[in-house]
Image (cartoon, rainbow, N blue to C red; front, side):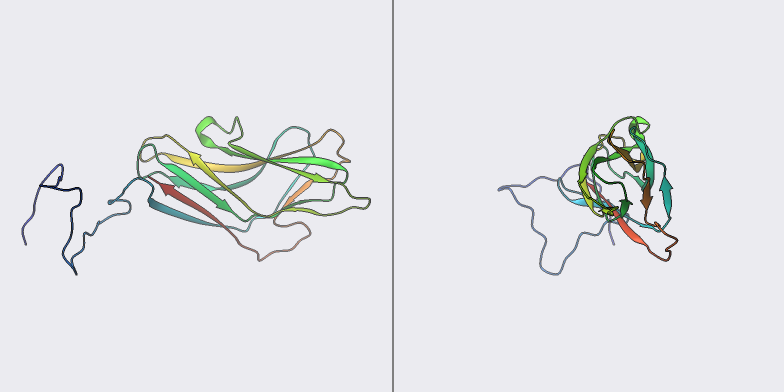
Length: 181
């Protein structure tokens, strides 16, 4: 077998380079072959920890979703989560924020508002979210993502429960991080 060393490929004419039928280009490590708009790295996390958080009108760290390490500079991270967060508070507004370690969790990348108008204690359940984060970081950067929650000023005092509200266990929820070049 011979080895060809080149820094760039170009066409002699036209705009395509074609491989013959049955031939393949194989990358030997994750993300070694990447084109703009392609997924180059997938990180899958199972979240099964229970957590309860006291009520607050300021953002409170509720759940650490996981960490992804970039394989390419200036890539984007698509976060897809399915993580139940519940409250029994009524007649109020709650806000869920997604934050990252890039800015030490100082600001929301994304936020979602929930309105709960109920005459009785009623469970409000947040279960799914997806967000495309333009990370703009160097390759090899570890980015951790967390959910933060806050209630409105008219909250009645019920806290938040993440995954494990009443002693339930054995649940694992999937969180996917897709790095896109």
